[in-house]
Amino acid sequence: MRNDVRGGAHLRENRPKSRLLALGSAGALVTASLIAGVVSAPAAGAAGRPGQDRAAKGAEIAAARAAKAGVDWRDCPADWGLAKPIQCGWVSVPVDYTHPDGKQIKLAVDRVGSTGTPAERQGALVYNPGGPGGSGLRFPTRVTGKKPVWANVAKAYDFVGFDPRGVGHSAPISCADPQEFVRAPKADPVPDTEADKLAQRKLAREYADGCLDRTGRAVLQQMTTPNTARDLDVIRAALGERKLNYLGVSYGTYLGAVYGTLFPGHLRRMIVDSVTNPARDNIWYQANLDQDVAFESRWKDWEDWVAANDAAFHLGTTRAAVQDKWLQLRATAKKSPIGGVVGPAELISFFQSAPYYDSSWVPVATVFGKYVAGDTQALVDAVAPDMSDTAGNIASENSNAVYTAVECTDAKWPTSWRTWDRDNTRLNQDYPFMTWANAWMNLPCATWPVKQQNPVDVTTHKGLPRVLIVQSTRDAATPYAGAVELHKRLAGSRLITEKDAGSHGVTSLENPCINQRVDAYLIDGTLDGSDVTCAPHATPKP
Image (cartoon, rainbow, N blue to C red; front, top):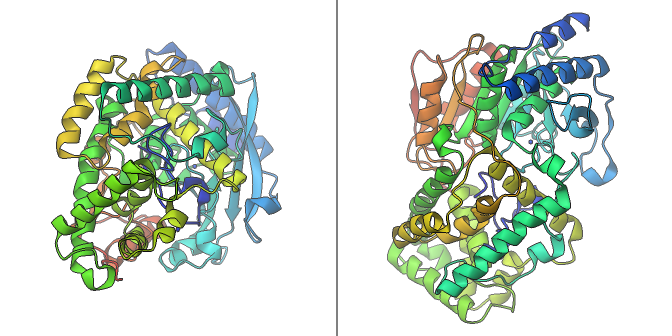
């Protein structure tokens, strides 16, 4: 399951990520002296791996070129939705870093300048929101939109976003026809029979084949986290930055961890927020199984909150009562899709946004309450795909294609259906909310048509600065254990724990205990003498 999905049509700020679509099942479910520094880029962790050595050298060459070329900043294209003073540009990178003189692609980047005085400016802060498959181009709008929690940091840094390779405006890839990809209703992801499983397996294999057919082997083979990390270093060089300041959320934390391993001497400051467990045996099969467990817990947190606010939503005064209403809704949609388009798969895609983000608690509960009170159309409007939104559907399909391509190519996945069936059947018994939907979304990796890689061994190498890690204890998409694991691997790092909270993506929430420490780190480079535990941010109010 993607680490950054926003479920539900009510969340429009970043439409390409508004729905998670999982195949046929889960539904509508980032100067001379500079060049010299680039050329001497460390290739930590590459020793003894000829391919990695060649890729490291290729990254040095690409970064040196980018440092010389810079970025030709201009007003953003009108249809990108990024108004002045945000500027856009392009950075060229090789498709294959082992052949840096081979085919190049252009990565879309944007920026807004720092708001402080020239003396206050500390360079660029580059952002990745996660995914894989998320676009970071809206990051500068945190400045133009005057987001209070970023006001101090904005005085010191240009805010820089980018579309990673394959995403959005950066040589986008595809695995399926977008209109067919979003079409609803899809099959219930929870199988009733072996025939249901066979049908889903067929869809997964067809999707994997579609990735090869529509994207091509040469590009698909290079859709990896290490290559995206190399792209990030080329962007750093193009920006004229000797060292990178980086903020990564969700999958963006894994991208940052890999970057820090490959380019430890090229980092100045790094914050990772809502952390993907970087252990090699966790990438990516086990990571998805762990998500299933965490989602069930956070789903229950939401149900408890809905029950405590029964006066607003009228869905029951206990968790059990709310769950019963959910199961009734699910059964109704399974028997006959609501409005002809909303089945169990579409419901899961919409409702999963509540365990993801506290900001979804009220909107999801409101739609749920309206349905129970007899307003079926409110549910259909919120959940059903908009077939007329061809641009949004293209973006949704592209985002899922990148997710699949990166996760499937990054690491070895089980190829035996018996393994998948055993593990997900077992998990579904106690954690039924997301297990099977998540399984089908990832099953293309079992028949992936290009060579799967070995994950980078994330660790501390000479030159790595002290990193700030921020994590809530009840995060569903990136369970807390991931932050603990990364903390162990990054020497000198500090961990801020938001206790008894679970919204995915902590640094943009209003919590002074966290906000002040983020400011202190990015502005002054200061960290606490020990790890810190913060009380949770405010619970949403109906």
